[in-house]
View 1 (cartoon, rainbow, N blue to C red):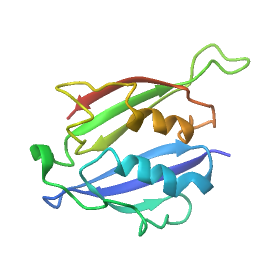
View 2: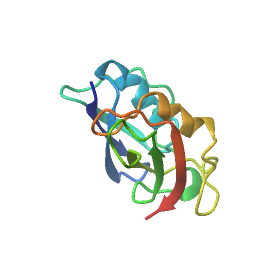
View 3: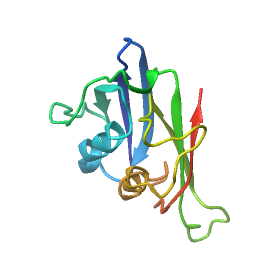
Length: 142
């Protein structure tokens, strides 16, 4: 069953950002938070579904002063999946990651084939629980 995951971040300057996305199962919440952390220079300060997610075991969970990034600047990752039975459109999800790692985005876009993005496909689903199997785009947004 799909559940809503909300992640709160803090950058090295003390600015915060919050991000939410539907994921495939509550049991995968901590792993999915780690996937988000792997793509951001921000520190994860809180993650919740219906109850808080334990983030004490996240690796590398510190705010970094890399790329002179702020939590106000984000990377938008757009995913889509196959057309569900009886539907006419592919399910689509876009989520934003604050203070993205410079290695993941070059100028205004990033490589959708990068393992950091394709790893999300194993856990992120549409808000109706539909499978997503394609990273459509990775863009820099403000």
